[in-house]
Image (cartoon, rainbow, N blue to C red; front, side, top):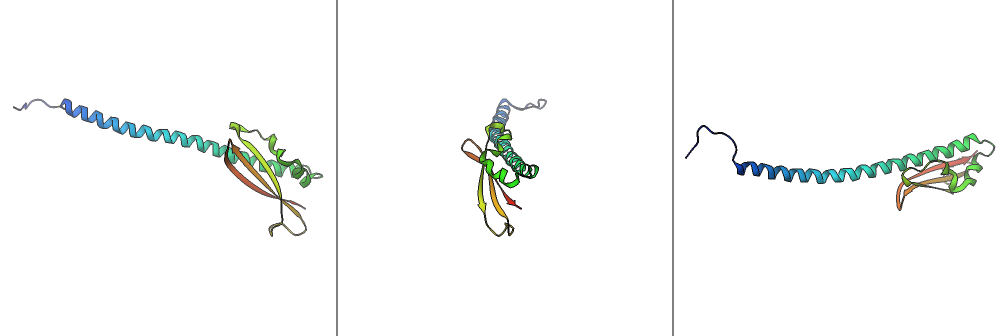
Length: 135
């Protein structure tokens, strides 16, 4: 028996469409959760890199702005020199100074490698190195 004048979907067809849409929605929402986690990690990494660069710029400015103290004032301040830079999001900055005697150090100068490490908890976000030379 056919109904020639009636058009539309049967109840079974509608239920099948709803099931397919529900499966697609679950797949999309699980991917969205991973994207949200990645965005938070990227923001922490970016903050770490910016903080390391700010510390490096502070080291250079401190050396430049204190010509009488210069090189020795930066080196003698030790790892606490970048404490003036605010630590957003619980980031920690550590600066280490080690003598540097490689070929990149100009003849007749004393060079020191400043290593700036930014961590958040136990995770290292960024490590930056600067070579400081006493002219």
